[in-house]
Amino acid sequence: MTIYRGTVLDTPEDPFTGGPLRAEADAGLLVRDGAILERGAYAEVRSRHPGEQVVDLSGGLVLPGFVDTHVHFPQVRAIGGLGMPLLDWLERCALPEEARLGDPSYAVSVAEEFVGGLTQAGTTTALVFGAHFAPAVDALFTEAARVGIRVTSGLVVSDRLLRDELLTTPERAYDESLALARRWHGVGRNRYAVIPRFSLSCGDDLLKACRAVLEEVEGGYFTSHINENVREIATVARLFELSHYLETYDQHHLVGPRSILAHNVHPTDAELRTLAERGASVAHCPTSNSALGSGLFPLTRHLAYGVHVALGSDVGAGTGFSLLKEGLQAYFMQQLLSEQGYQLAPAHLLHLATTAGATALGLSSEVGDLGVGKRFDAQWLRPRPSSTLDVALRNASGNEDALAKAFALGTPADVRTVWVDGDEVWSQEPA
Ligand SMILES: [Zn+2]
Image (tube, rainbow, N blue to C red; front, top):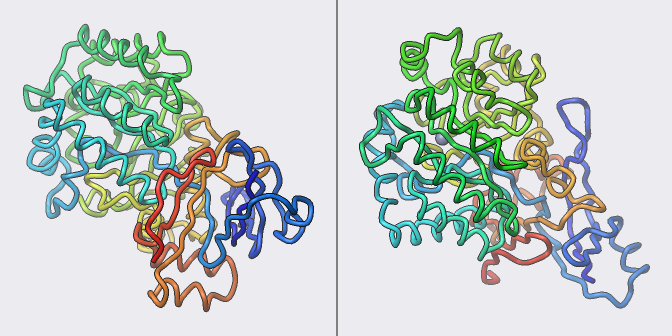
């Protein structure tokens, strides 16, 4: 057994319904076989287990591993394409890169870069938009399994209005998706998700095929995009004669408790009501929405309707893998919405980046916080001595203030070590 000693912060109870930040300045976590057996003041845990090995994580903060609920595997090299709205950005930046994943050896390299990007940012669980090519999706699952992070992903499908090499047919989509799900769903920490790119690029027969795959994959997930950009929404409205965007998925029974829809920047009240009724989640992607000028996320309306919201980096429209940056940008957005915005405290940001994502992915009994019984999926934020974050943490007025400083100043360079199930999946050389 191992005792991890450090300042441990997490949000086992939802701060949006009054849950506090749980914070212990000198905590001990006793871990055996990847599970947290005891948690308490370090001195007490230590006195009960004097012979066990101690890993000293004092200085900095110990947080749960982040849960990224929307991130694109093929787009790691497309990060930073600024100055375009969604549909132009897709055409000029994202889709040419997505097409390159048709080369399996290229896909293997990108898979390494992508999984490395997640772990180095402290992300231990992710719902990943895969590639349009089955061998590339194999490469992603293979790399995720090698490194050890928890990935839910699948083949991205489209059958219209994209570059030719990214298009498939309903029959091929069904066959390839099912074959991938049989290879990877429930294998190690991998799980399968059915992923039509967005309704704009998917006809009804393809969405029907997506539903058919979901019926075959027990415990499978559904994810796609929704209501990101006004031009996209207008195009979808022209293509489908339905009352709103959500109905393009809902009419095929794709919206339920295991569904996560990214963005939802411009929802109607009817859509929010339906999302809440179905128990579906929304992945809020604030740096992407800002970079593409998509709009300011109406968090207050989502909360008012009872729609579950988690955080996504949306790499490559998002500007990096760090959910610290996404949390900060989420905070900025709500501030910019002034009286329509939600006043986000540090505990809300941590919740959005951890427990909210675990709940959205049906993993909240295993990960998301560092309580007894949970898996030890964790990260140690330990900034370089005398860096601004180091100075800020040493002078913080308390744990909540320290967490605010981590969101304001933290970057992947501050993530010293990352664990999944108690196994180290990333560690920097000691500074
Ligand atoms: Zn996306």
